[in-house]
Amino acid sequence: MADKEKDQKTKTSQEDVKTKEAPKKETSKDSSKESKKTAPKESDTAKLEKEVADLKKKNDELEDKYIRSQAEIQNMGTRHQKEIAGMLKYDGQKLAKEILPVIDNLERALTVEVKDETGKQLKKGVEMVHQHIVKAVNDNNVTEINNVGEKFDPTINQAVQTVPVDDDHKEDTVVQVLQKGYKLNDRVLRPAMVVVAK
Image (cartoon, rainbow, N blue to C red):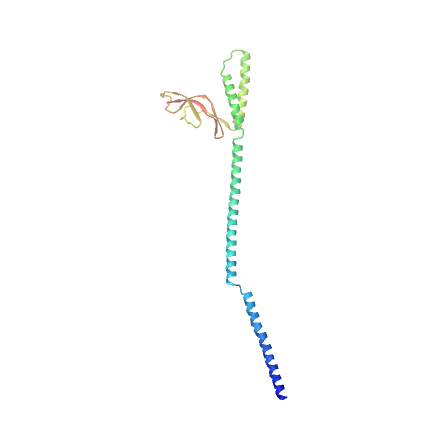
């Protein structure tokens, strides 16, 4: 009987040892699994680094596009302002070109000699109309090109006739204006038709 009791105690103590050891083994397995879960794998780190690099690259590209867009908007604004300034500066160019032949005709009418009283009154009226039109175009920055005696400039003059050089006229100078030219600010509306000494 004593042997039986001894065997039973031995069995019980062996089972206790097994049960005590078993949880320890499981604990070590569990801890290794947890350490594997918490410690990122090398491949995960590489993936994250690649993602960060890709995001940085995309960010740089977007920033570059943004800067270029801002520059383009500023350029468009500058161009728009220049166009408006040009339109304002040369506003009325078409009207001025249409009025120039009227001024020419009024000047021709003023060169006619009149002897009777009615003709003189009529000429006085034409002269007043001419003065008003000339004042209106001058007030709107239209100026006459009259450069008799100056060097011939093909940008503002059109040579329609030449005369030989003499003591009074040097070579390549304007001798006579056959038809007046006009400028609007710095733009030529109509070049002056001139006679040039050659």
